[in-house]
Amino acid sequence: MPSGNVIRGARIGSRPERPTERSAPAPRRAVAYWCRNDHQVEILIAAEAEAPPVWDCPRCGQPAGPDAQNPPGRARTEPYKSHLAYVKERRTPEQGEAILAEALAALRQRRGGG
Ligand SMILES: [Zn+2]
Image (tube, rainbow, N blue to C red):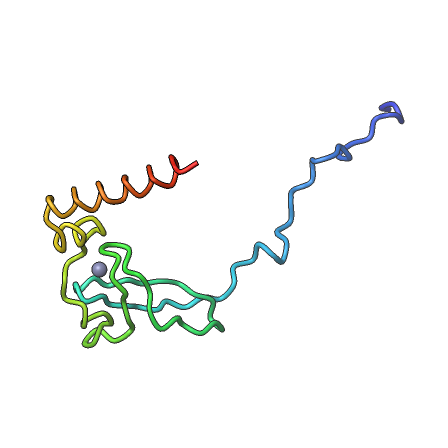
């Protein structure tokens, strides 16, 4: 006869964890988008949620829409350019130097005024 002090199966944490309601998978549906570079993007959203009208393409960053024949962003045909590229397009290096010198002169004037 075992000792009455032994309690079996009552250790803390020995019980298997039951899945809570929160961890139960919510119903989802797949929504497909196409960007103007013919990339197809498929996302999963909650079944009752409204699909967003556009989704950023993870491959090229362009907006993607649900209509494969008419993806958004067609109006902008220019390739991506950095801000610096636009500045360089507008100004020659000489103009840049002049603007810089002007700005520095104004700065010095403000600082040295007192
Ligand atoms: Zn894309």
